[in-house]
Length: 459
Image (cartoon, rainbow, N blue to C red; front, side):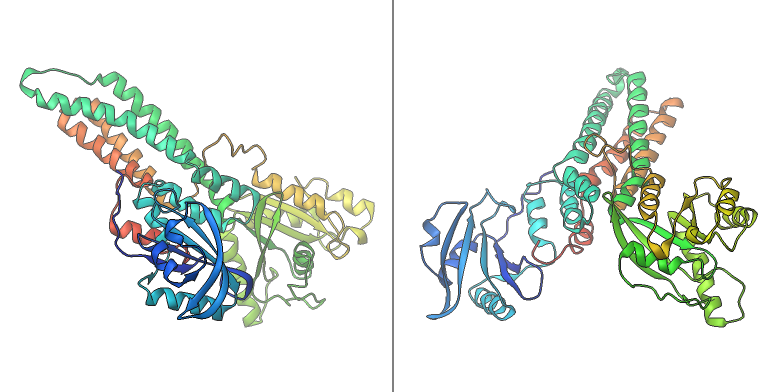
């Protein structure tokens, strides 16, 4: 369903990030975008220029020059929003930007709402809703993988899969609806065996898509990685080395870290959100005890655990017992032996039984590359082919896919019980509705408001 929005108003907003910079871009969209800009622009007559051209001139307020600018023209429907769009590149002074916007508001524009440019693009049929959401993901991407996945979705990769599934279901739904028109003649246009085979195939594809969300969420939001261990194991030192800055307090006094410290780094295109926690030990200090409690909470929320231990102050039996205790959910866990520069070969050999252990000297920065490589392997994204594999990264899409799957289950149950065509058709329509919510073929104003208000102003 293409909405084809007809708007009479023209919107304006700053499209570049706030703050002083060399250049700022002010964007307008709407039927009067070019003519309104032309009233304050001194240079060529913008209303007589071709689309996709750039023009130098000045912005003036009753003869007073506000700034020298470049004006880019995009004439409907050949623009991001499919409306007339103007982008004014001015100097990045907040004062200049506000003066130009104030002038444009006086001439008849209004301030754009969050995400309104992209919302207009969607409503005017430039792209579907899943692609529009990918625009926000692309802006927020902070790693090679998140950029790659968002780019594929913005270019319609995920949408094509959903539309193909929906088209196959629509065919069978129409056949069953046709049967209802000949109800008294007992005819069957929709082959039930073919329908059952189709639904099982669609459910298999949906299961694969839902399974991909585990990876997609990691790619989009990063891997919550908790660093745990006893006091003075070197957790804060390790965090500082990984971040290459003095983020955490390092001290020989046990219990220095009383809360958790969080920051992130990118390793081979994957964002890891590292959390340095309070040392695990029995304590009578109330503040430190709260920190230990929060450590256990963070463990339950993590996707990856680094258990760091001082190889000079532990035994293999103690480490093995702690690994079992800390990981009841069997999350990916990486045992890391620290301070190997202070240990004898015999001591290190004693820990050879710890499966998957990495040996480092955090204070010296030794073997950190080995640790980083082990982290990447633990996340298990190495075999991921983002060019070929469709990956779900949006929780809203997961919800719609789950609803679709449940509706298809009801179709299968109805077929098994020999239910009438009208009941089977109703369940198929439910599945079609849920699939349509993903791409925006089925929308509500509340849904659109919820999606686009999360965008930045000017996009």
